[in-house]
Length: 276
Ligand SMILES: Nc1ncnc2c1ncn2[C@@H]1O[C@H](COP(=O)(O)OP(=O)(O)OP(=O)(O)O)[C@@H](O)[C@H]1O
Image 1 (cartoon, helix red, strand yellow):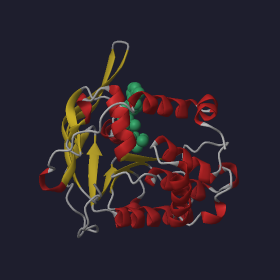
Image 2 (tube, protein in one colour):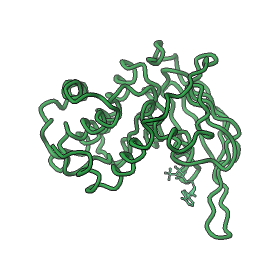
Image 3 (cartoon, rainbow, N blue to C red):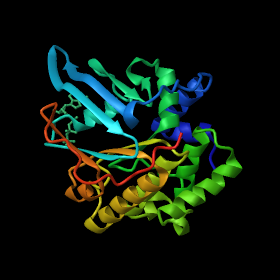
Image 4 (spheres, protein in one colour):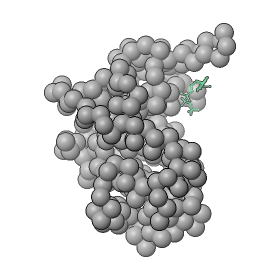
């Protein structure tokens, strides 16, 4: 297996993750405050304007949003309405022009970069439309790298990798490279990787967009089941109406604002709280 240095030199994306992790391991864990009424993610007065030279493009125009522990929340709305921008700010990947994001009691908009990187690593799992797997690593190694970054000792990591692959139904594909997997299988590896280390929040950006209908259905099923089993909170940007079936709430974003109704769409699916 490749070591972290070799992987970093091959993949710039990993190098950034690795560097952020190495720089941040000296920082203490975030302070967890009492979370009001089971709300684990709270967005207040969020605004985002992109600047290109003198051109200002206001994209988010005052977003207020609360997400409860254990819920699956969908961000839906027209193309260009600001969903991915909102998700990226919730993830601490983008800094808003104004407003705050409070996650597990921590205001992430005011965290220094290194602490933010550590906070993300400990608390958030990401799933992207394009899978973002390392092409030279097997399915098992892709998950193993995430566990390694989170500081899981290698013996434990091996066991956890197999557990995660089994949960997404891919144990027999452990030694396959991404190029030997279908789109749906790649996304299932990416889900297993996102779940590595038991993050309390999963953020997903159009996880079924690149998949055929059957693979998309399987991924939706797994997301629903795994979120429920892990007691994770899931916030997902999607245009896929089938995902509404597993969601607790749909939040509609239009022209940078949340438009009503963003009320519960059915009885709460998940009763358990996120693991501490
Ligand atoms: N880095 C950037 N610089 C300038 N403008 C940007 C940047 N990123 C996004 N935008 C613009 O901000 C607006 C919102 O983009 P965003 O990707 O958040 O929308 P979206 O609702 O997720 O769209 P889609 O459903 O098509 O993915 C768009 O008009 C987009 O062109």
